[in-house]
Length: 510
Ligand code: ADP
Ligand code: GLC
Image (cartoon, rainbow, N blue to C red; front, top):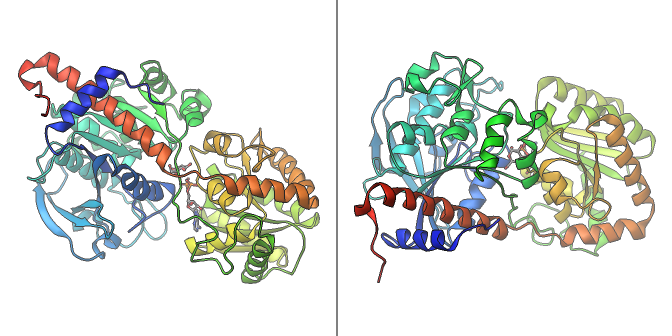
């Protein structure tokens, strides 16, 4: 990915040399696995800033949800004033045990609630999500510009998904010359609000147009990010290409095509945390390594027992996912009976849309010896499932990156995925798992039939397990790509500044 030009690299180095010598990056997110997570964004937000610490002074900003405020000592370092309908708030700061600085936006009236980052206990979105996340975006812009913490300002802002996507827009509206990157983890969630939101969030009337944040007569936070950010990334190269086409572009494919032509859209595949190592994992009953198939079998027996399944020597399929349409859960529900009648079993761990939860539970009652379902979110159980299952089902209709298929491979469970997004890049068809072309019941069943054949040949099965378990997917490579991009984006900013005002040209450090 490194298409950095020499002079840009040099400029970036000189520019950063002015202060601490390390690029200062504010990483803004609505989920952070250390404290609160709904899906993959939380995992990425905890891992990527840590991997970047090697080169950059990366600091995280997230809202002070109830779960976050319970984390212990938070020092108050600054304040953000009210603006339009956004209430004033305090800026807190803490340091994690391993040294990552995390800023917390403290505003109890917006964030101190029982529920998830985005909604209540019944999964209904909070009705004031426009104000909640505009508050996050504006605070991010102010903090980056050095107006919230008197001791720190950022060279660059990195925002993630719609909840923080308004930050680059606030920078533009306030005339702050700070470069920004928006990472799209999922284009399907756009943060759409009625036109009245424009006034509530304090956006200028002039921004409500096609070259701005207007999207089919709504305010779109995600479109604001795509439009105003200096650069857009997404979490795999395949998804970066897919979203420039109408089928995957969720109505933003035109703008994204423009960004791609301008060389301002990049795909960088996610990594996974090193703790996903079956020999060192604390959560599985029998740690094992590649080649120790007895160890793998012991985990399979264990998970069958945990899910109340009959003892079996047939293949065990797993599904660990948010139970939503994107993940192709309905396809698994349709395929379940065939899998069971062919001698397979299925374990499911997930939480999500009520009708999918109910259908899953119905299948489990119908085939109680062969299908086990737990509704809930529990990482320890997910690890035991990957350790015990033979195949991991990921029939997602689209999948920007996907982490489950990487975890599965590390734990010797061969992923069966739709050939899309990150699944296409991380599953080697016939070698470490299986890919199918159409997200349909027939497509999935074709791959499931191949899985039965693989399972019937222990030699082939173990060979594929060895290949899968040898994959690493660590954060080193993606972090290097992000750092190169940071250099390029910061370097471009310097060129703009120097053209506008020669007095801002920094002196090279001695
Ligand atoms: P997404 O972010 O779209 O949900 P990802 O695959 O990127 O998809 O990340 C989801 C993460 O959450 C994966 O690590 C997956 O294993 C995990 N996960 C999903 N549902 C559950 C659950 N019910 N319990 C435990 N872990 C889950
Ligand atoms: C999103 C995507 C998923 C990706 C994750 C982390 O939730 O749906 O594919 O892995 O973000 O980037």
